[in-house]
Amino acid sequence: MTASEPSDVAARPIHVTETLVADVALGSVPADLDADRAVTELYATHYRSLVRLAALLVRDIGTAEEVVQDSFVAMHGGWRRLRDSEKALSYLRQSVVNRSRSVLRHRVVVDRNAPKPPPDMPSAEHGAIALLERAAVIAALRTLPARQREALVLRFYGDMSEAQIADAMQISKGAVKSHTARAMATLRTQLERDA
Image (spheres, rainbow, N blue to C red):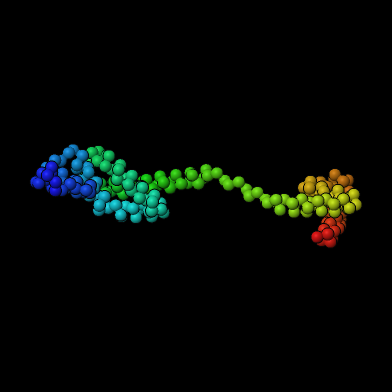
């Protein structure tokens, strides 16, 4: 103790609870002390159980702690409006549940509106292979007889039905099937031979 400090004054408290107890012991009870003392006691007694409750609801310890802290802050701010201080714990539990619901609703909205990642871009190698394959198919198509090539192009590139192809080529559906089957067999043979 230094010469400037009076010897009859107790050591300065360093914890919130100690401050409240020291203020009461000294007889100076400010208007907000009732709220401070009550919320501090609730905090010391029920904080962990409320965090466990919130963690079960929001499935995240950090968020659960924030929810509980916000509930205690709200209770402290509204202590004077609390009609029955015996129901303070019930109020806190309800506040924790409501705030947890808000967190979960917010997560749903964020997840629903999250930007979708851009599609994976094919590699340059993939693009080169695709060009080579396309060039090989086009070269093989050019070797087919005209009717077979027309039937195949209308079927797979024009995405037409057999009836539509028959109408466009002015042939029967059976002839469309025959031209398409022969063209596919020829293409398969040529592409397997060139590969």
